Length: 90
Image (tube, rainbow, N blue to C red; front, side, top):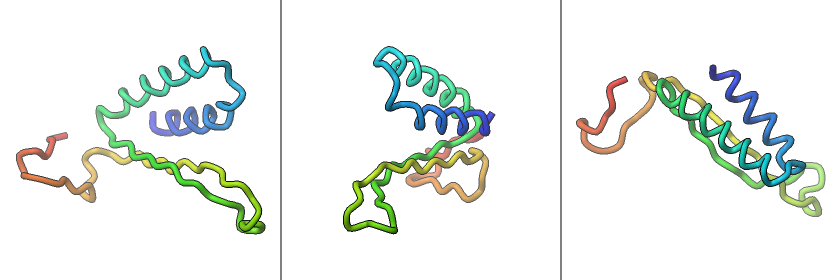
């Protein structure tokens, strides 16, 4: 489940620049459906970072890098902010 989600996001990220608008909408829907399925038992964290090539950082354009983490909701390292009654039981 998790591996399939990460692989699909990776594939679509690689192909997204060449997709037609309707395919982008279908892709977004597919990823959203996969995400909903995962969120039943996992937390998904994502961040986008602009990076440059290390070899020629002074002249290279920035490119986006996606950082994606999928962590089991029952992981004891997850810290909840706020009152203890807001912690969801998983």
